[in-house]
Image (cartoon, rainbow, N blue to C red; front, top):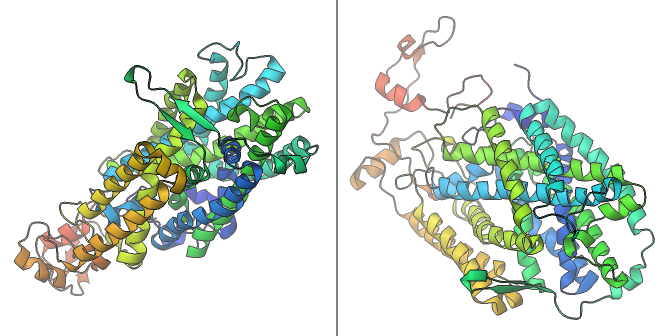
Amino acid sequence: MAVLKGLEVIAAEYRATDQVPSTARVFSTLDQFTLWFAAASLPAAWLYGGYMTAAYGLPGALLLIFGISTLTFIPWALIGYIAADKGASSVSLLRPSFGLRGSKLPSVFYLFFGYGWAAVNVFIAAISMSFVLSLTLGWPSAFDPAAPLPNYFMIPSILLVCILQGFFATAGHRAIRLLNWVSTVALVALGGYATYIVLRDFDFGVLLAWRPPTALSFAFSGGSLGVGFTYTLTLPLLVDLLIAYNWTWEFIGDFSRFAKTKRAGTWGPFAGASLAQYWFFSVGALLTVAAITKGTFINFAASSDPSSNATLLGFGVGAYLIILFATISTNAGNIYASALGITNILTRWKASMRKILLLSAVIVVPLAMLPLLETNFVFTYIFFLDILGAIVVPLWTLVLVDYFLIKRRDYDNSLFRVDGGSYWYRGGWNWPATFTLLAGTAMYWVIAFGFPAVRETISAAIPTIGFVVVVYYFWGRARGRRTPRTRGTSSASTAAAASTSPLPAGGSGGPPRRATPRPPIRTPTVHIGGGLRSHSSLRCSVRSREFRSFFSSSDTPKDGRREPI
């Protein structure tokens, strides 16, 4: 079978429990760079760039964009390093940390990332498109006081984006390859010109000198619940939101597993995503401050978006295409990642990846319609980022601690199993990891909403990261020094099982969970007539029952593209 090349491999039928074979790991550093440049260039970055000016004006925003954002991308890029090392998707990297069954819990969170971001990206794109359509067709824009509630004039744009992103997510490798390269070229050409015509007349001295009189804030009323709270956009709170924004690019591993080298899977995404966000964040920040200094500020979503200005300057079609390319490129990855999350939860579901991808694309459609009913989308977007931060901060911190500090970069291939192996732990669950994740999430929420003054001073993410590192490192190391009970055996027989297992122990993951120790593997005499057709055709000293137990699993290759586990 011909080996797929470059970006074509994205659409290959690899599930979460599949290891990408070395022959299919053909992404170069440039492939990774262009993919992530296209993915990270999207209207949501304009909006968050506007938020960054709320604490200290443009200087504070530039510090966040070029300093803190770059630093927060380093741990994120290390997820790509692990994926490239093992040929494993992002969601499968949860299995050594949480256990084969325990990984299903964070996989549910993973679906929240994928579907949540896909829906938010579609709606923000529809907001941008509404400015273009308002100036070209006379339709009411998203923030037009005369617009109906819900604004059904935005529905055509939502459906168009959903249809196109669903097509590219499920159409196959040629469509995905074409999408990413065309998007990168279009974004550089159209986006570069739009940025120039929008920013060419700015007085940057005035913009740099502006400071908000007080840190901007958003109030949320609890309504009938009688409970509300206020977001004050201080620098520490903006750091929290920035970490949430950057670390929820959850599908880095889903494409870094196709990288030729660990360097390509790590630094290609880092460079591509960083450069794209430098550009889009900066445009959103500059436009927001310009609108405030000119007295034309409406809200962050409207004022940070260059689409209306570009349309007024005669570039309406180009602005619409920029939004379309940017959103589709991003959400094809989100849909793909969500499908992989489903395959890790439903490991025995036999549906093809293409059908699961189609299902994921359909799920996004009603979710993207929900914000039409929201009257304060700007606040909802901040709250969405905060909810993601409470999950993603302890989750990826724990995975990095597990791989680099506890397992010492030694994950074995039993992470691709459905059951048994090094990562079965106790009934498929690694309870220290599960507890630490839930405790870290609770800690983030308590600081964020229970002690807002603390959060606005030191952030919620930094204490949570410290808590997870300390608790999981010492608890995980202590557990690794104890030999856990294996599946179906007594504690006394555990050592014997470990000593005879052909699978490595996988760091502190413990010995493989098998009920009966295997005899030493001897070289069998194999008679093959036209290929291996049944177990009865093998004449070897290993008993047939044990042979079937070892080799029969859902990970057995069917088409030659996957490595045996």
